[in-house]
Length: 279
Image 1 (cartoon, rainbow, N blue to C red):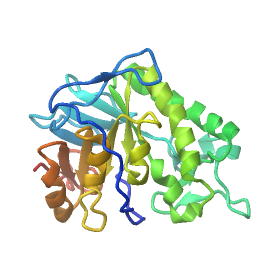
Image 2 (image 1 turned 90 degrees about the vertical axis):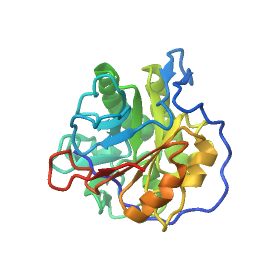
Image 3 (image 1 turned 180 degrees about the horizontal axis):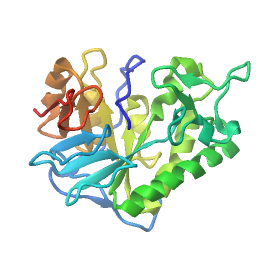
């Protein structure tokens, strides 16, 4: 079960390249890096974020994102969440003990580097050989998503290289070289591939094989990044907020992109913490 990513960095203010928007409500198809066609999420469609556990989508929802361990929602456009740059927590499936020890990033003393917010080991993508080793394991999850019938991928933690604990050991170049291995594989399986957060690299999304954006907290007054995503991805963006202030700002874009507010733990409907709002 996955919860949303905490924000631990400051936003960059540089302008990003403009990408032509797809007409609202119309599916677009592409063939990036592959002969297999894929379909982008319908733009400006009602969206539900279910990475904390699957449940029956509310009436009117057309697009849903679910963890790779869950099944797609019948009749909807389904995005498959995969934690692609970090392990799961120790003791969970795909925790650090399920990985080759040589593929875990280490500090100067040889200790595995852990993301303190999530108790997840960070994967080492600093060489071609290690990137390929990590990608081979993540591709198994991508194959599972495709076999289940998901339409697209949400590859989380693209921005791991910005974490303070990484201390520059992983660079933006490492992250982009690695994610191209995954996006190419996703396209070969007939799935669109979403860029998760990481507004700093939004202008490079086409080169990285990333077709749409899934952006958390872009409306948060601390970041104010929503316009940077629409500049880069046009209408091919999905905004997820966790605060009332962030939602107010993100709703300014609700005539173009999908916007939803969820509770911080992305709780399933019927549980005590569940919250879902639209603009």
